[in-house]
Length: 289
Image (tube, rainbow, N blue to C red):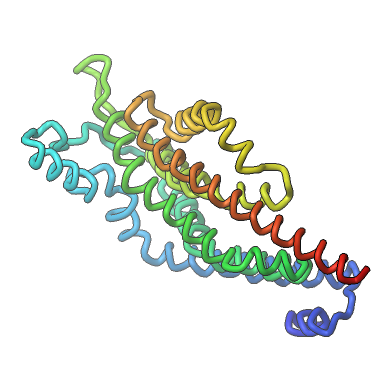
């Protein structure tokens, strides 16, 4: 069976690959990507007690880093209103084998999270040979920027959005006689949704770059519809945050506004590069005539 190196050498030599050879190459890239996810999932299973006790249950404890920083900011402002003294809820498991299932699910999520850079790199290795030289040059550093934005979004979702949402939902009560006892499945689903959703949302500049390269989006278009984007971003923020807390939604929306402005800069750079390439091509054509 041909190895991945053989396929890459054929591409380097300019030999055209058959459809079946492309499928074979794609299969090995996917196998390696899935394999990396499995490896990290196994590690997450081995260290599941630490992951649950420190990482997953962290936002449910007043000692969590974010709550401590909020309290320090409050003291600097001369108020104790930002301090979180207690988070009023208990976690429970109501299914036979529920904890075992959630341990497996969590291991898979953690494996996907930490294997993302390598998995994306494998897929990028398959796509990159099919790009033109100019497209390869424009997409230089794609793996780095996609990974940086993804983990920036994940960290923002975990340290900023998640504790705000958990604290709001835990302390929101209709009556003091009602005790909050959350299902562990619901709790973990909330954390996973918030962190991963922020990780995906932070890919906005990359999406704008691709759309700009395709000629679908221009900086002029984005500036013209900047006010409309505010409404869309607020809707996205409302979807990401399951709580009706306006403050949490605004916290999510603010970095998305910033990323939109970064996207305008990215789109403008793509347009300038396109004009430069067009002028260079026109000059070569004129010299050829």
